[in-house]
Image 1 (cartoon, rainbow, N blue to C red):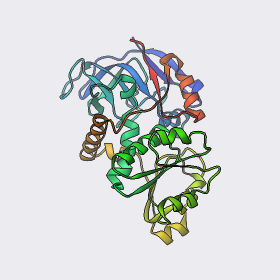
Image 2: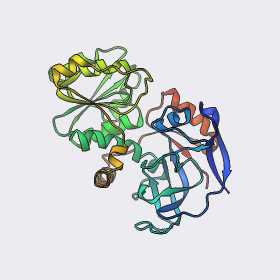
Image 3: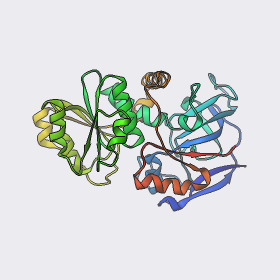
Length: 331
């Protein structure tokens, strides 16, 4: 029997249960993984609470990202071998697969070999954050030399990934954070500028940084009323991505800035990239190249053992972490 985290009702972290389950043999197009580390994501907390893009079918499992070794291979699986060190890419429904466990089944299309020198904890912190940022900034917006990107909630794992990717392609990363207490850490992580939104006027600071031009790209996981402030900071012809709903408040459409600037306000999720094989392949190559060059390196906020999964979710929801939260699994 394997251990798996499941929930039988929607709610807070307290609904999570570590249970014994039968995993079985992998079917066609599947692999079985012996898990060593699990990366946590806000999407999983939303799924658990009933606020995600898809509704949970109870009892439900959780987890998009796991790193470990291949233990068994199902029919029609190529390019991976038993014993390979691998990680999973979020590219499946949480109602079909869940990575919170010590032994799990995963779809083979979601498996990527872990590069040499990348630990299981780091490997569990790669794919959601870097592919999410890559898809918006590089695949869609074509961020590059001379561009300025504003990154709200920049101390999140995706925010930090966006900073690293911006630096990798030669753009200027402007990180935002509520207070100034994370400013030094954000600069150390690569942000050229940091704006504390509780203290600073966002639009005025971005205009100062850009010489009045504004930021061509804004990459926002918060949504809600602050979108109007972000729109004021955008350049003419700019693009404002909304890829999350951390505020959990209604998001107004910034009509006047949109009209005056020809601003695009665009919803976006990682699944836009991973559902297209060619874009998915380009994204994986970009991330693996960045890891190999040292331009991309996951920042780990905290680790928890699997037995403390509820505490790990509470820590995630408190929103004070700097980087990725990873759950470790004993061999």
